[in-house]
Length: 470
Ligand code: FPP
Ligand code: MG
Image (cartoon, rainbow, N blue to C red; front, side):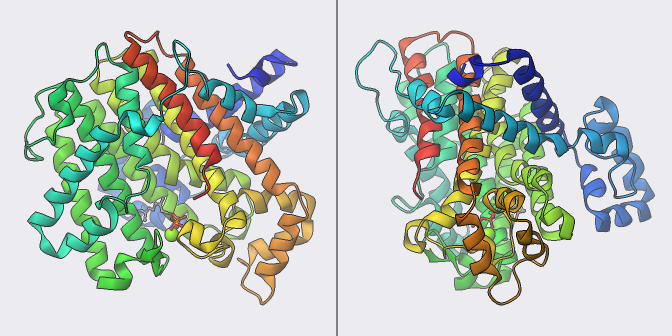
């Protein structure tokens, strides 16, 4: 457990963390019809389609489990549900992070650093990404070949996202394969470090190949969402290059995303595991819900930390949480370990996005591969701005009008810099990284030295997410 979590009033802290978890678990369990509840336009469409609404009501998890953040099809939050929505999430996380900083000046940052620097058995710790690089390379190469050999027009999409050297750190695949090994009873065999020759529709014969498929599916879903996102944002660049839509136009870029999603669906079905299918499908649903939440936010929502956290869970953390859990499920691990894997992914995802939001203010355009202050310029108030608005009330109208008036972006930047917004966002990111560390430390004991090293790799990833500069 992170150092700062041990200090101070345990009962109060436990209550706050429990509240935070309740809220976020509510989000993790959110189902299809939450869309109708959070997006009024869709609610109206759903109300007009009684067949769909009845079917959704009969099958949805929020009706059956009570884990929901809205009720009915009115399109507005019902009071009881609204109380459980992240009205408390921001406050709980903020309070916990702020208290952490006060109780321990080194903060959650240090706790993560200490855990991430631990090598089982002593000595210098191996690079977490290097531990799984060979296997990740196989997954990437399979994706690349498979996609563009089948549809040459997609070659450019494959080139953009799966080409060696242009694919980024492949954080998602690396995390997933680290998690697979951290929980495994034995290391993967040598043949798992070769490219899987089976076609996407063929049921993978062994557990490790099935887990590799989750890494593959996760990359496909992630890239598909970016292709669509660049169309929605009219973005001309991605990862420092022209975006696909800028090169081939919106229609082909959208279809390329659709193709990747279709391919992911085939691969997912081939796993023949309904829980894994459910988990990955939910992450898809959340991606779309997150994008719609962002796109349709009204003035109050644009200025709301709750809304921001909900959107961030949906757009970034859900895919990481659900894919990590799917890997554990396919490994046949205990419910507790599957839950820990999910928690790890969720907290890493939230920390990742918070750091991203900080970098939008602190990094140069060339470091990020996209224009600086991109969020502000596209009208988005992220955590640093929302925190800054608590200290500078005059920021609120700028947020609500999406920084559209001349000088708004510069004025907002000045207020963020004159506030503790960036520092508090960093604390919140460190809080989530510390929670990710705690999730790994709560997993059942590693079965082998190999598992222990990969578990240490998962811890190191949390530090790398906090430290990343691009
Ligand atoms: C990047 O957001 C975008 C996402 C994380 C997800 C986008 C999701 C959709 C477009 C919904 C459709 C989903 C699928 C699977 C087709 P950003 O604009 O905040 O970040 P950026 O700076 O990287 O563009
Ligand atoms: Mg975008």
